[in-house]
Image (tube, rainbow, N blue to C red):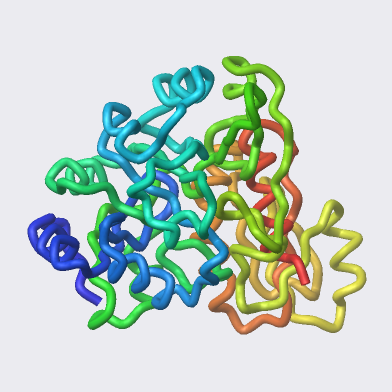
Length: 318
């Protein structure tokens, strides 16, 4: 796997309809030219991603929005002006030139402007937006470092543009619109409260295993290869796992039990933001341990904690 902070090779590959792993503030994305069917098909094939699961289009700036989206609601414009660049994705009616491959045949397109200097530098030197789902095999733990991507893909298939560790560490929040009603499709790094302060209460529709309108809506996702259990009471759960080698991912408290073989505390000072930024890197580390089960602790269900719990629930789904 070739990692580089030099944009030149990444630009050349993207212009030749290849794909490149790029950093964003949320997770690393597997990026390709939205106007290249070859590149988009390569993304789906590399990830083994089902074609019914749509991709997110990444723009260089808000001024590019009307090139990919049509009939944009005022509430969507307000959210974009407020949160872009940043971890908020909007699902909007698509322009006719946006491929059905990207949108899974739907008449809507998911779009955002990433808030990462390397991603923006890359986008600003291209004359096309990039479709970029997370740079991992479908359903597995999202990557937040170049090394995570390197562990997933052969260097002959994917060039990695190294932008360091992702600052947010979990995916963007996804919001769409039903007439004038804003709808939450995926909880993420932009808080629900901050969005509702601008557009009013959100309708919640975050699960769809048949024909999701946005990424991240499937019941099982972000999953380690090791069996994973979501727990509201770690000590009670540990009592049922005494015969297992357990890895514990806790919020801010360290636990003591004979079954614990490995333990990681997400934030010793109880910061939900720190917990989010370390979440996927912690799951990658835990998944590499010689253990039977990963026990993940529910975090306070407020602010970005709502998104963290959502990821953990999907990671532990059977």
